[in-house]
Image 1: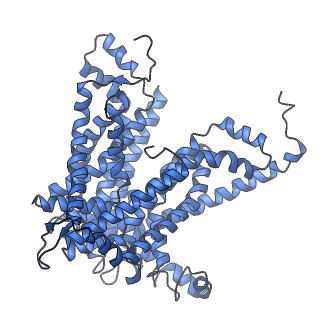
Image 2 (image 1 turned 90 degrees about the horizontal axis):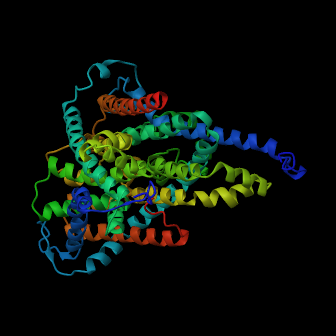
Image 3 (image 1 turned 120 degrees about the vertical axis):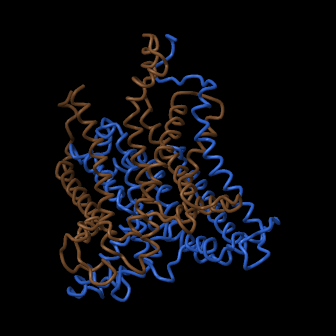
Amino acid sequence: MTATTTPSPTASPRPERRPLTSRILGLWAWLVYLWLFAPIIVIIAFSFNKPVGKFNTAWKQFTFDNWLHPFNKPEYRDALVTSLQVAAVAVVIATIIGGLMALALSKYDFKGKGLVNIVVVLPLTTPEIVMGSSLFTLFFARNIGFGFTTIVIAHVLFCISFVAMTVQARMRGFDWALEDAALDLGSSPWRTFRTVTFPLILPGIAAAALLSFALSIDDYIITSFVAGDRTKTFPMQIFNANKVEIPPQVQVLATMILMFTLGLMAIGAWRTIRRTATT
Amino acid sequence: MAGTTNTSLRKGRKSTYGLLSPAILWLILFFVVPMATLLKIALSTKPDPWLPNYTFAWEWGNFSDAVSRFSSELYRSFGYAAVATVLCILIGYPLAYFLAFRAGKWRSLLLGLVMVPFFTSFLIRTIAWKTILGRNGPTIWFLEHAHLTGVTDFLRLTSNGSFLGTPQAVIGGLTYNFVAFMILPIYVSLEKIDINLLDAARDLYDVPAKAFRKIILPLSLPGVFAGTLLTFIPAAGDYINANLLGNANTTMIGSQIENLFLSESNYPAAAALSFIFMAIITAGVLVYARVLGTEELSA
């Protein structure tokens, strides 16, 4: 069988050509990663820079000062605290209601499912600037005060769709008969959810929450429309001040956010590895 | 009960709508209703130039005013976004291919690494590019010492020996900031391809390029389609890159909308422009979906 399907002489260049394309692809991958990480390396490096003047954008001298005093710039510290508060509230709300929606969409067939699917996708295909301006007109027309609450409302909105789709992707192919098995064995519906369904969808929920956190803490465009004059998030503070000053604390706090998110990702990866290793 | 397969969906009950209602309510109240408000204001007049109020009047002229006043920004936004999207495909497709078929045991790690830069602030990454490409940055220093600025000027990578303040810099920023949204969907569609199919393709076409064109490329088109939407739409609406990396001649539509809303307080004109922008994008997406003939919009 294998002897008859060995390559004919016409296919002989293949063994020499495949390594070459592989090598080119590998080289390309290295270049792309270098390009992707160049700004990250610059950010981390400049968090150790002692700048001259107000802009930490030209290399001068190595220092630990910025890391010893990361919160020396109160307006950046306060903006980061606001961002973290917004992200915390928005992630919890978006993960719960988006997760419930994903559960309904992947488990049940119901009237109007097609329409629901379209409404979930629409926010993803709407430019941020349009979402921001439409929310602005709504809050303005209804005389709703701009501030923390309106920012949270907007962030939950753009996170819901991501949560619903991430969790749904994880539940595709989920064996709902496991729930029946638990119920048949006398488990209550709530206990079944807690001990059977939830642990199985937890990785999806965690991934969705992490993604929502990253989206929320980084958003500028929509936030700038719904924040009003008094509330400032971290990206807003940086954007509004970047023509006046870029203190090294910006790079320090950005590196901290990166480390925090990477830490969460690593915990997730480690738990998955441990689980697959033990089962 | 015995006849149902494992993955078949259950009939929805009242409780299904209970699970759905919080999210649906949120989407209606803060997505559908605001869009209606935006349309209403786009059709209003602004009676007093000094006050931020408006009167609803079926003022369709706002749309044509917006198009004629901001046509160059509209062209520019869609042009920049289109070039950036093509660059994202050219850069992202080979990488996704590498990750799907050649990365071996490093695959998950390398895939995770694609996401890492996107967990750092978008703004700070763009500011970092300003450092890298700036007048006093390493790239210009190198080009000047190697006497290559003439070459890069000729190649249109720089203008007058400078990277920043050019359309190229803005397009480069857009490409950088949205490329992950291209790599991931292409990777997902490539990864789904059955490995046996690849072997079959190699046996069927003795030229690897032909096997790629006939088998792999068509199967990965849904990923390219999804990636194109996920890069083009945010890139067209973005104005951070234009603001940080461009100059006064690279203004994009987003900053005009923001300006009309937040600085000029001319809500009818701003809403009309915002609505036109979305309408063009929606029409483009529909045409694109039709041409590519895929129904992968939701996947």
